[in-house]
Amino acid sequence: MKRPSARSNQRRTKFPGSDGRRYADIEDFWRARKRSWYSKVSQHWEGAEANEESVLGGLPHTHGPDLEENRRFLQALRRLRPSLRFGRVLDCGAGVGRVSKFLAPHFQSLHLLEPCARLRAIARQRLKHLKGKKGLRFIGKPLQEFTPQKDLYDVIWLQWVLLHLTDDDVVAFLARCRDRLRPNGVIVIKDNVAFGEWEADLSDHSIARTAPLFRRLFRLAKLQLELNVKQRNWPGGLIPVRIFALSTELFPGAEVRLVGLQLPHLEGKIGTCTQFDPDGYVRVRLSSGELKAVKPQNLMLASQPKADTAPKTPPKPGKEKTKEPSYWPKWAMFALTAASAFVLFRYFQLQEHDKSVEEKRLLKEKEEEEAAGAPLPAGWREHKDPSTGCMYYWKEADPANTTTWQRPK
Image (cartoon, rainbow, N blue to C red):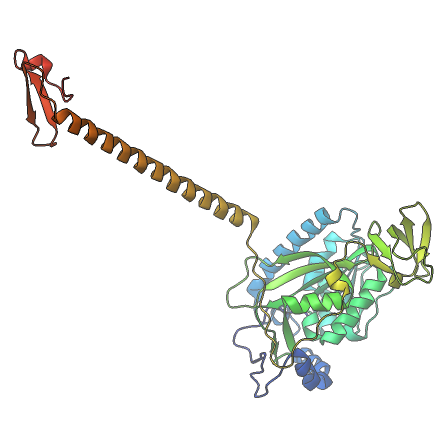
């Protein structure tokens, strides 16, 4: 079940709805739609054509930019997490195997999760060259009912599939993935990200969430956002797309604080996660050098902001609008600061220049006034130049060699 940004001509339900109903918020929408949501999703994909154009929502020209951005994202992920193993990947909502085929060369092993049998059959045919290689495996379960095997996957890839899940099931599924990832593993999500308000496309029962809504779901699933990349070279008129890399809040090397323990002498102590035991405990090396086995629920990231741990103020009832935050790139801020500094410099420079010119003019006038009151030396003559308005002088006995603009003293 892979699908790019919702097309602009599709029948959508906005916030509030455009289907004849008005929804106070997204929770109100799910209360009204949740009961029949998954049956409608299944009905759509059972009736859709089992080919690449269909899973791309009739937009085959998005295939190239999509895979190119995925390639750049994996390169960025390798730089960000040098310790990340590219061993086994699970492609969730694999559809006809379009993205799975892209992922295969980057990982040692590949599993595909796709509930629709028709799409799964096409994926098998597309990836038949990998049979007996890459540990290829096909799983036919819907995401909301699937639980990954513990410590099996280094990367769980979710591309254009969470848009078919309710908010509650998104949180529950991400939490199950979080608890079963291999140590230092990541969850990758690529999805439509609506600007301003969420949108629901009732033609295939998918929802485009906003960035603040995604972040809220990530927090509820206790996942740490490590990488957030916007899809480039995306056709106009389509909802923007972003790729997120998420990791468990606890990972080897993470600095943590011990909380909620029955042992007062350990309460609030700072330490570093060293390993995760099969029995579910986390080994923490305290600053004193002691090694303790602690349950995950008794650990909190030491760098976690206090605002995240405090209870949130409930939103006011009624329509709640959220806007995308706007961030200036660092280079733009630097350019703006430099331009402002240059303008101020030129302003003060011109002020000083004008002041200097005015002082020279006044000094010249004063000298001329003082000179005008004194008679010329014997034998000198004066005359006003009609073109400049200035007086010039010459000695009557030798005018050719004595003409000057300076008044003789």
